[in-house]
Image (cartoon, rainbow, N blue to C red):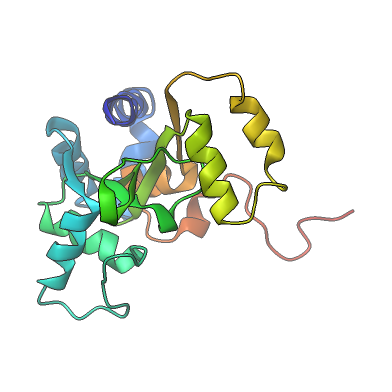
Amino acid sequence: MSVMEKLFKATTMMVLSNCPEDVNLCYKFLAPGQKDRLELMLKNNFLIISYTEAVEILKQASQNFTFTPEWGIDLQTEHEKYLVKHCGNIPVFVINYPLALKPFYMRDNEDGPQHTVAAVDLLVPGIGELFGGGLREERYHFLEERLARSRLTEVYQWYLDLRRFGSVPHGGFGMGFERYLQCILGVDNIKDVIPFPRFPHSCLL
């Protein structure tokens, strides 16, 4: 999470210092208040809440959601945007998701009946999820049992073989590039930030 936060801030500062004319053009015509919102994100430490805390916040919300928030159900974009607003429009990490919502290779938290994994999503104002990632399960027997329960052992035997002789604790994450551009520039529609847009007759063979 520290790496994710530093990456977001360092990259954004670099964009702001190297491309001020492009950025200010967007702020002038597309998102007049975006500069202040971005400065708020850059000067504050990102917040951290658990998935369980997030669901409780959503259940107590006065807002009516299209999708009713329940523990064990994946967070929708409307939920993610509400959580960021609830946290003062400061980016927020949501951690420790239920195992059922994440890929089989996420590291088990060994927290009893809740059965959560060490996964994290970074939510940002106006967008929702920007980063997603987590720790990977390096313990062979955990992976073996999980795949057996899901009847996926044969399909993922090659993955088990990668852990058969041991591994090291490790993790990873990914960032949505177009979502990042939306976030720093204040562009509402993701189609407007795609580097190589598609439109009729644009992909001639």
